[in-house]
Image (cartoon, one colour):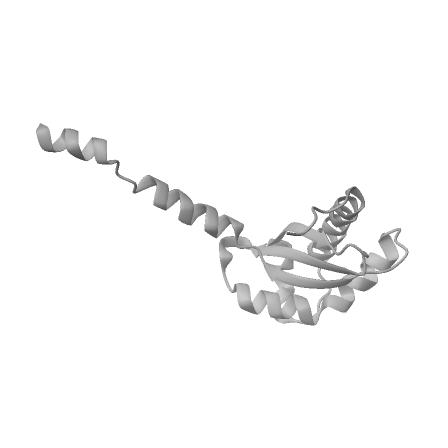
Length: 129
């Protein structure tokens, strides 16, 4: 069982989320896949306890080309780190790793499962009618 993030980790994660979002909105990437990086949503950033690493969970608009976008973002991570070093008021500039945020997909899957549940009482009532 691991500890929940500290207030500092949460605050730094939120600051990094804003910097990453602003950087994506401005563009200036080498990869043609990231020309529409403004259409990528940064849903959460989790900083490590020592604040030297951070994982950014992203979701491309419509969930299209997720693997290609992730590969391009991770390849361009130095641009984001440079921007964090410039804007962030941190002792260390954390290394950024991008991962797909599958929370929305999981929520949709759970919703579908719940929608398709039939209760044995309902089945008994229907059979008697």
